[in-house]
Amino acid sequence: MIQRIQTVFLFIAALSAAALHFTGLDAEVFGSQYIVAAISLVSFMVAIVSIFSYKQRQRQLMLNTFNLFINVLLIGVLMYWLLNLSGGISFPEKGIEPVFPVIAIFCLFMANIYIRRDERLVKSVDRLR
Image (cartoon, rainbow, N blue to C red; front, side, top):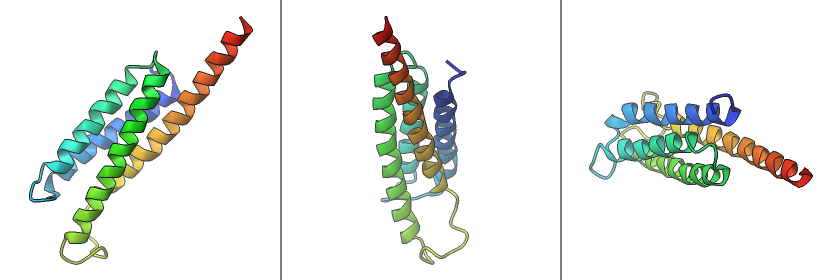
């Protein structure tokens, strides 16, 4: 359902994962340039699956929680990459890559709040029947 606010948040999270996929190709972590891109692609796919499982709110919550853990892992990997670049953390032109998982975490957290609110609404209506 496109008109639900959590779908908008999940779409923004998917867009931020896609943006990280394309901007994270220059991040060489553990000897490979594709680690960040692969993890961000997994995050993108989980967000898309979560968007299309709007009829199963518990499944959506589980997928969003899994996606939150993926994005926390991405932040850790990107911080490791930033700290191992020459110039330390204060070098001004390191890139925008760590911003995308932070945006995704915020959006996934907000989507979980609204999904739980929908779940409570459905349970309260079922009690009235």
